Image 1 (spheres, helix red, strand yellow):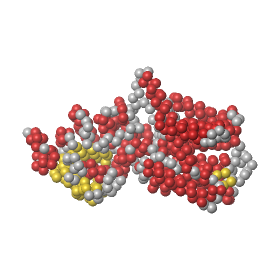
Image 2: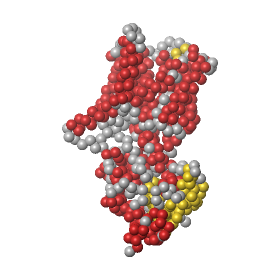
Image 3: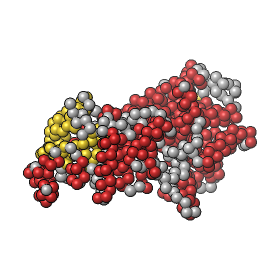
Length: 245
Length: 349
């Protein structure tokens, strides 16, 4: 059985149908990409999964439990961690404290939370900026911190909302390497929303494509790049040609 | 075993800077010897009021400072604590120590029920909500015959010192409020580095991020709101026996709610010693300005000077005295060419 199984997720904002019966599944330890043009409803779908929004219809089964209407903190405790499209670094807390907040999801003792936080910071390579404030650090580092914070909650599924947005090509390369390393070491399932194709396609085992709130395609990265509906809706023919070879 | 851990944490100040620890030690020393050194009655009254308002400011810091939820209704809890002691004492001649838990329990229950509703509101809406609720409580106490309405309650007179009814000598009252103040300080010191304290700080920064990290935002806020109400109610209980007379005007008024928030905001919200410095600035300023200018000359001159000082502070140093000190420390470090990365000059980690 899939780790995460979302079926028929529908979310309406007034007259706008942001998600129209979207199905998506993530297997244990799998990296799944979720792509689509601007306004496709990716982040809305994400928010429904993470409990920040309640879907109007559909069911979300995670780890054998129906979490459809659960609030965000319960979803997090059940083992789904997420990052945000616009980084939500808690500016009044140091990097270490930010990650400790994540660790507090599993432990009560402060020093234990600190130890866990430092372990995760070492994993993502941020130990040397542990005592700095997020505002003193570049965006790429803040995004790494947000990733570390999410990892500190010991999730079974990590959901990343456009981690590559606003980063330079080198930084994107570094981030992809970091995600691979985490995947290798922790065997963590990941759901990656992304605009940057060069980032998400090589990373993902399976890719879903949203457009206009509906799922228009799913498959392996290769299948997706050759899918006519996807090419039309999103990728543009140039990219598809370049990847055929 | 757990209780010893909590007590040890409450007495641990090691994450504060050396200057801060020396300052705290000096303050506590000064409070301890004050009645023996200063014999002036007016100065002693000001000292007691300073400790009283500092304590109420500390209570505000739990939810307003560390939690970032601007509470403008703190006076209601002071009122509950004061009426909890005064009403049974007047009606049935109950001693202080029997009325105290009633007032505190009522404050906690009210904050629990109210918090579950009010604390769903964010930002200004929460502030307005607390303001409205406190105003309603004040009116209820003014118009209720049961609380003796606007006439207030005059506590029965006992021969001082009476430790059952807590009718003490001036020196006794000084140490009574000092003990309550230190208790509040230790509780806040435990709180700020506890899991709950970290969670409240996360909520202050970003509620969505906090929830995504498994924090039950509402539950955490309600807990801190209830702790805050306990401390404020203790202050109110002290006030009742200290003045021997209470009415809605003295323990439930909007002015008091604002004053509680002000002590923390002027000194530094979300800094352990912020409300203490705030009270040290505001209370003597208010009382001595009142004494110097209130009696003659231009009527209302004291309020005018007071208001101008507050406005200047709000305009130029919204982070309060703590922010001012922090800016000075950073400026000195930069001037000597040292790194300021990751430095927090005040309030510890």
